[in-house]
Image 1 (cartoon, rainbow, N blue to C red):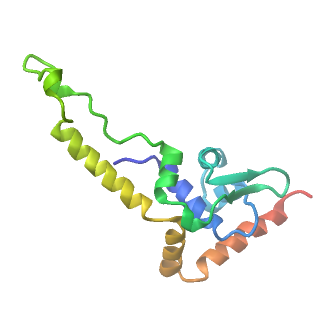
Image 2: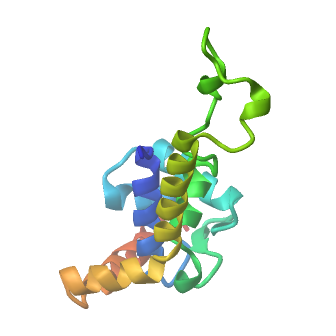
Length: 164
C-alpha cells in the first residue's frame, strides 16, 4: 500500500491541532513542520473538504478540528487526502487471452481479487481503529507530557506575529 506524502503531513497537522487553543493558519502549521506553505495548504483543503477541519477566515483565523480527536480516525484522514478508492481494482484478466474463462463462468470474484479485497479491508479496519487522540497520546508517551503543550504554545504564539 503506497500513500501520498500528504497523508503524513495531514496526520501531523491533525495531531498538533489537538494542542492548539485557537485556530492555526496553514502557514504556521507549515512553519512548524518545515514544509512549503502551498503544499500544506493543499492537504488542509482536502481535510476541510472532508469535514475534518474547519477554516476560520480573518486575521485571527486558521484551522481547527471539527470533531473531537477521538472521533477522527486515521482512515478518515487517509481517505480525505488520498481518496476512498480501493488499492486494488480487478480487471478480470482471467477472461482475456486465448484460454480466457467465459464471463458466465466467473460467478465469483477471482481468488486474487478476493485476497486483495480482504487485505484492503483489513488495512482499512486497522486504520479505522486508531484515532487522532490515540496518536496524540502516543506523542505524549514517546516525547513526554510537555511535547504537545509546547507545540500548542508555539502555534498560538504565532498569532502575535500577525499584523493587527
